[in-house]
Amino acid sequence: MNPILLAVLVAAALAVIAGVILAVASIVFAVPKDEKADALRECLPGANCGACGYSGCDGYAAAMASGEAKVGLCSPGGEEVAKATGALLGVEASAVKKAAHVRCSGCDQMAEKSLVYQGVPSCAAAAKFFGGDKACAYGCLGYGDCVSVCQYDALRIENGIAVVDRDKCTGCGMCAAKCPKALIAVSEVKTAAIVSCRSHDKGAVARKACKAACIGCMKCQKVCESDAIHVTNFLAEVDPEKCTACGKCVEACPQHCIEML
Image 1: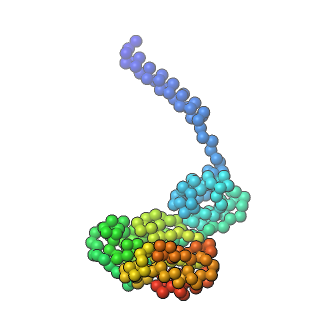
Image 2: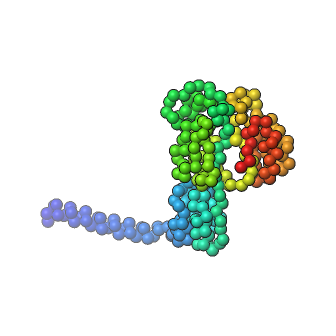
Image 3: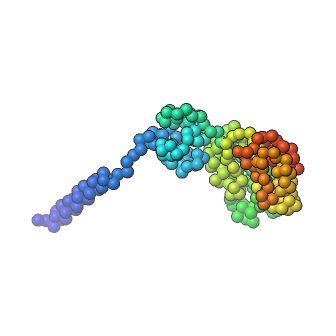
């Protein structure tokens, strides 16, 4: 027999055998599909933002199918997705509205500059250059890295800091992941106090760098009757679950860095 023809036949036979083995293996070792999870996944927008608290849309769909996660956690999908997934699971559901907030009040009028930055107009780049051009090492640099990733036109730079339009914000969390200073928090939309500062410097140092910095004076903590606000490491923090939105901490703050959202 012609050696070339023999080689072709041998190769063809090996290919057929390998194909059969792979076909059998795919059947034997196949992972059973969860049809409910697949149906739920089809309802989700595919943003894979993680705002629901799970590893993307696949993870959230699987968690809902198993009963681990409640319906309505998909912020980008909103009410439409909440109703669609609720219908598949046979439960009534409404969307949990979330939105971002920039925890910094250090605008151009309040924050001091420590140097002149002339590099790439990016917060991530500026932060690597001695922490940025602001005297406060914790403050918003205002170069708009968060704005560049927002798909909903919910962010803008105003007076040197990022500002969120909470009516447009879906709470996807893309801006929070992008901020090199970790200044952006995503939380459930509810009336509660929030401290718009992340400085852990001592009072005198913080106030010298920014007129709107939290100085850890504890006046807010002293007037809070619901034990919702505490000062730790020179910075006040609010527990939204305990906050009753009485507004006393806002009135007591001498720096005006506590807001009622």
